[in-house]
Length: 94
Image 1 (cartoon, rainbow, N blue to C red):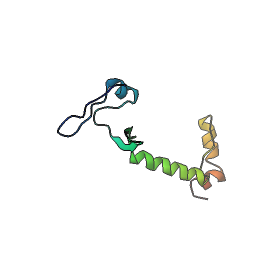
Image 2: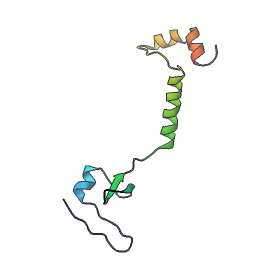
Image 3: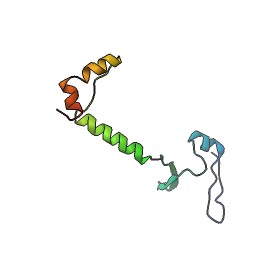
């Protein structure tokens, strides 16, 4: 197992290249620092995208509320469905 030395100043710890590559860690990435059984544990923090999180939450809410359109194979099937009462309920105009 490779060893590293804590550097002076900001107490930085260089990660060996093999570890960086294995965990896909890059300059500027955040790592969560915890202790476990007398050891220091570094865990990569997944990058969050608030706009994606909001879109996913909205989609899940639509699914829970039953606001899902059926699967279509052709544009004609979509157009036919848009003329039904189910479509009007789907868009909230029933």
